[in-house]
Image (cartoon, rainbow over all chains, first blue to last red; front, top):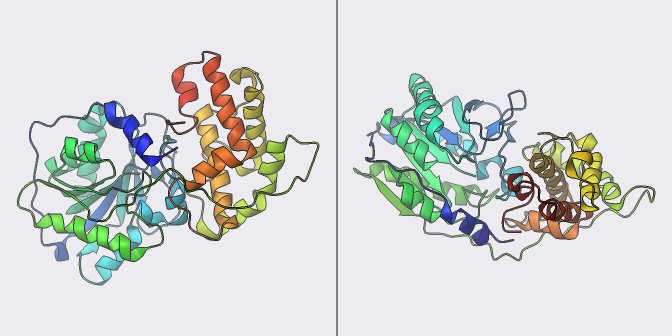
Length: 148
Length: 226
């Protein structure tokens, strides 16, 4: 079992194609509100777990630290996030960056999706735009995406 | 992640995408991407190392200075050489009337509880199988390994998810038993090669494959390269 061998297994996956790359210019970082969106299937214990091929998202409360990883894949090391949430979801690091003025603020809410998707159409057409609108409505300027 | 970055950027939010697989982040080409050559499961690199994590974030936020789409690589790499294994002692045999794998799982419960009390439960039991029921789930895998069809073995859920909870229970317990933060994959290697439960799961997976069960039912029970 080796990380390189597991990464090699993904070599045959078809990657999504985007005809153009959207590009948004944010406000200065020191004024920006930052949120995290992760594909680690994180959720709070009182929220629904992710089902296989779940294309929805969960809203995470940035004030809480009780997260469970609902990702279905066996193909990642789980001890990193078990030891330190910030290995996947760097919420404490963002709080520190806000405290020292590097970023404007940290959003009170964040989002989690399930990264183990073979068909991205629902995420691209439905839950992705819905999640983006949700964060825009909460005046988020910058999103940091983290995988697992 | 990179695909979602395209979607969010289209909606008017500036995005920074971290990626652990170079071919994926370069091939999907998010508006701003940072390839961090770290093991899967550790996109910020090192647990309990805020300075390292801040270096990753500093590079990522620096991408906002670009006036056009950009994908860069983080300068530091963490490479798993496929050999690191956790070093932690398993509990001695306690109840000879139980299957060794079940006795082992029961013996790890105090360590599991200590780890959850200290760290919280992010990847341990509870997604499908509660900690109290781990022993029964382990026993089901031993039955499959010994030839019982998986649908008759008492697996309390989708086999891959049940195996994930057992592995999570063991890896979480191991964090309380070990004196060190394990390297990436060291916990998984310890589980699948050094424990009765891990070996039973590997054997059950092989038995399911040999029995001609559908590929997704058995394949995702362990990491794909096993």
